[in-house]
Length: 555
Image 1 (cartoon, rainbow, N blue to C red):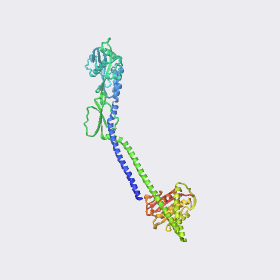
Image 2 (tube, rainbow, N blue to C red):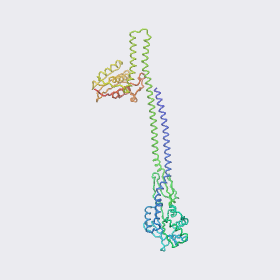
Image 3 (cartoon, one colour):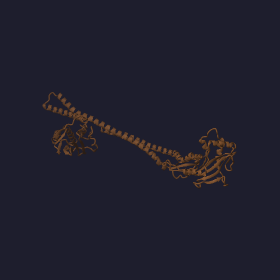
C-alpha cells in the first residue's frame, strides 16, 4: 500500500507538473505574442497618430482661413489704411504664422485704370497699396498711390485674383443665389505660403458687375473692393505633439527634405501640410529605444493580465494536486481502517469460533477447560464490545449527540484506579504519577477515563520492552487542570506530528503493523474538544513523547 501511495503521488505530481509545464510554455508564448502585438500596434500608432498631431498643429491655420478671413467682407470694401491696420494687428497677434500683409484699397468702375485690370468698359485697380508686419508691425507702409508718381508694379497677386473675379462674373447665373463656398473659393486665391482674399460683394453688386462687363453704364458707377494678401511662414506654426511618448522629435520641413543621419536606428514618418503650406510637411522621428518605452507601457498591462490568468491556472493546478493527494490519502486511510477493523474483528471472532467448536465437539469438559474457554470467550467478547463502543462513542462525540456529565472526582484516586487497571493488564508497565495544586475536580469521569486509557495503551504499545514507562502528572496552573503523559517510547517523527490526531491515520513502523484502526488519538482529540480543552504533543524519535491535556478547572 505504501508503494501504491508513492506511485499515486508520483502519478499525480507528474500530471500536474506536465500541466504546469504546458501552461508555462503557453504563458511564455502568450507573452511573446503579446509583445509582438504591442510592437505592431505602437508602430501602427506611430504612423496613424500623425493625423491628430497635424489636426492640432494646423487648427489655428484653419481657424484663420475659415473664420478670420471672411471678416474682411464685413467692411463691404470700405477699409482704409487705419481700419486695415487695426484688423491686421489682430491677425498678427492671434496668428504668429502670418508674417506680412499687403492691403489693396481698390475700386471697380467703367473708367480705365493704368494699374490694374481693364476688360472692355470694366476696370478693376488699386487706389492705394499698404504693407503691414514685415518692416513696422503696428504701422502701415504705403507701397503705391495714384496721387503720386512712386514707381510700383501691382504684381501677380492682385492680377490673378482680378482675372478670377472677371471670369466668375462672366459665368455668373444671376437667376440664382450663389452658395457661400462658391463665393469664398472664387474670391480667394491660395498659393504656396500666401493667401489672397477679396471681400465678397453683395449679390446685387455682382449683378451690376455683370452689366458693367457687357456695356458702359451711365452715370459711371464706382464700387469699393478691398483685397488683402497674407504672407505665411510655416516655420512659425506651433507644433502640438499629442503623443510625446511616441514622437521624440517633430519638425516642419520642405517636401524635398531627405534626412542623411543614419548613425542610429530610427522610426520616421511624415504628413503633408494642407492649403498654403502644401509645399511643407510635418516630419516625425523617434529612436527605436525611445519607442520601446511606449511599447513596454502598452505591453505591461497585457503581460500582467496574462500573468494573473497564468497564476490562477497554477493555483488551480496546485489545488487539484492537493485535492488529489488528500483524496488519495483519505482513500488509503479508509482502506487501512476497513482492513484493520476487519482484522480487529476477525481475530476475536476466530478465537470465539475455535473455542465454540472445541466446546461443541468435546464429549465432556473438565472444570479447568470450562474456566479456560469461558475466560477466552469473555475476553474476546470484551475486545469486540470495546471496539464497538469506541466507534460508537467516537461517532456520538463527533456529532455531539451525548451529554457531558459533571461529577466530582478525587484526582489521586482516579489516577491510581487507572494505574492499577493497566498494571493488571500489563505487569511489566512501570507507572509513576504526581499531583499538585488540586485534590478534587469536576468532570465527566467516563470521558476522562477514556482519555487516560487511550494514552496509557499508546504509551505501552509504542515503547520498546526495556522502556515501557509512563509518568502521569496533574497540576492546577492558572485556573486550568494540566495533565501530562510522559513516556520513553519510540517517539513520533516531526513530519507526522500534525497528522497523528487525524482519523484513520497510522504511523508506519514495526509497532504498528497490526491491530490499529487509527482512531485512538483522533478519539482523544474529539474527547478533549468535547470537554472544552486542548491537547498537544511534543516528541523526539527514540526518546519518547509528552502529551499535554489542558481542561477547564471546575470545583
